[in-house]
Image (cartoon, rainbow, N blue to C red; front, side, top):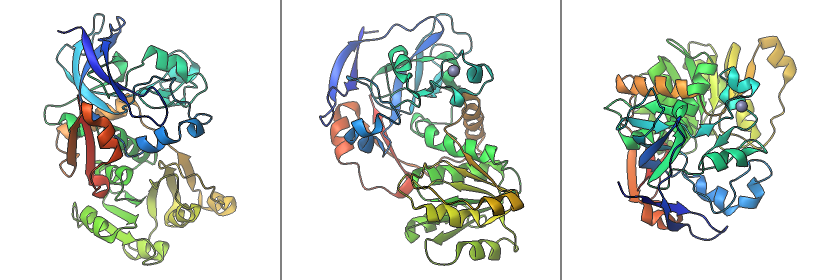
Length: 368
Ligand SMILES: [Zn+2]
C-alpha cells in the first residue's frame, strides 16, 4: 500500500477545492480506515459552500482547509481492535458522529447528542469542531477514518453507488419508522419526486405501505415515480386539485396514517399545512426537508384529532443496517437510480456543472 492519498480540500471560501496529497491516516485502534469507492455529491453542497459564513451560526462548518463528502461507501482497509468488520468488507459509512459519552449517546440516541456532527459536512452543535478534529476526512478523498459503530455492512447485491445514496434513503426510512409506517399503511409524501422524497417512497414500498400519495411540481417526473408501482402510488401535481379532497377520494374516504414532508428549506409553510389536512385522526406528520418558513399550526385541531408533528434528523446506524439488509433481500428496490460518476480530480467541474437532473432519480457520485 502506498503511504499517501489524494484528497479534495477546500482551502478558501468561494475558491475551487484543491487536490492535495496527504499521508494515509492511521486509525485509532477502535476505528477503521475505509478505502472510499463512491461518495455522493449532494445537490445542496454547492449552496452550503457558497454561503459558508451564513450557515456557520446555525450549522457549524469545519475549519479550513476541510474535506467534504457526506455519504461514502468503500472497503475496510485497516482496523486493529475492531471486532465486527474485517479487512476487505464492503461498507457504507454513516457520517453522523456523536460523542459516545453523553446521556443521549448512552441511551442509543446518537442524533440527540449535543455534539452530533456530519463528518465531511457540518455540525449540529457548537462543539462540532472537536468531532471534525477527530474525524477530519469526508468522502472526497481516497481514504477516511470512522468509528467501527458507524459502519453498515453491505450485501453483495448493493453497489457502492447505491450505498452512497443511503443518507437520503435512510432519512426517509427513519421518518417512516418514527411514523409507525408498516404493512397496510397509507402515506402522503410531499415532494415525492425529489432526492429525499423518492428515497422515502422506495422505503415506504419496502415497508409494506399499500397506498402512497405523492405531490410535486413536475408532472412528468411524478409520472415516472408512479410508474415504479402504479397500483400503489398516486401522484398529484401541485395545484391540480385540493389535496385533502384528492387523497380521500383515492383512499376510501379516509385520511392517511402518515405525512412525510420532504420539501426543501425554501418550501412555503402553506404546503405543510395543506399536507397535514390529509391525516386521519391520530396521524403523524414528520418533517425531513427542513422547511425554513414557520407554519401557523392550529394546535386546537391537532389536539382534538391527536395529530403528532415530528422533526426527524438522519437515522441510526442500526436503521441503516436494516435498510441495507432489506435492499440485499430485494425488498427495497434501488434499481431506479441513474448513477452519474465522475473522477475525484474533476470535483470542481462536477460541482460547477452537474448534468441535468432527472429529479431524485439522478445520483451523482465521485469516484476517487
Ligand atoms: Zn453524545
